Image (cartoon, rainbow, N blue to C red; front, side, top):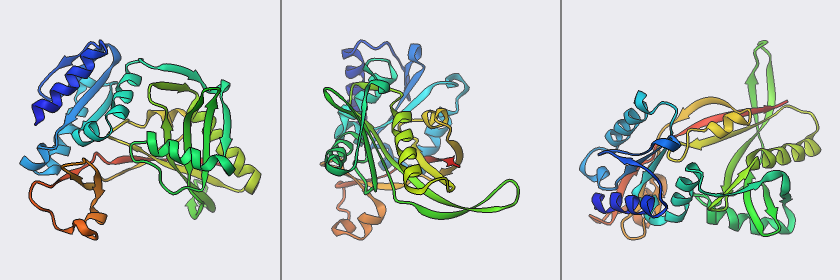
Length: 283
């Protein structure tokens, strides 16, 4: 099964004429400084899932790969969301149609909400999640990127001058891009649109936006460029993967649903790569 998985990745890379080196653990796109670590479902059966995570984490810290972007390509993702995975690889390897955010118009809320939800559901690896604020970028051809943000949560922060300040904390819940497209400046333009809407709603009170970068897909570099500060790591999460559909089911749902019993061979118990938390003060 693992060989079939690896071979399908090789076939794809060859089909788009990407130059790569293959080792027993990783595909190296050296000229693009990009690594693809295949994570087979079988690895979570034959050994403890935490061991899989530790081995991959050690690979990622290898000094030979310093400065490389890393994509942990889980087999269930490849089989259930192959187009999104391929788009991620093509984007990292500079094989995409470039669109400039400054030439896009912003749409949000109202009659656009359902369209934005459908876009995120189609093009984000985890689909749409309930959010209060929805924004998208459109060209004459249609929507090319979208973002969603949560309702506020009051939180008290300790400041450097020892004062304690009440913030309204929002979460950037989703960011999705049309496959095969790179929207230059897209994240920044959507973020600025959201901040402008907050200013119009609340004035100059202290606010912050927090978000997570998924370690399977990225190292969070894009958030750093937008001014977000790294805060902490979030531990890996356990999922059960349906062996037929490759759907991921969070452990908490698996245990409390009709899937509480696990017929042998029907589900794989896997662990994702965790995530990084970032915060952007909006003072």
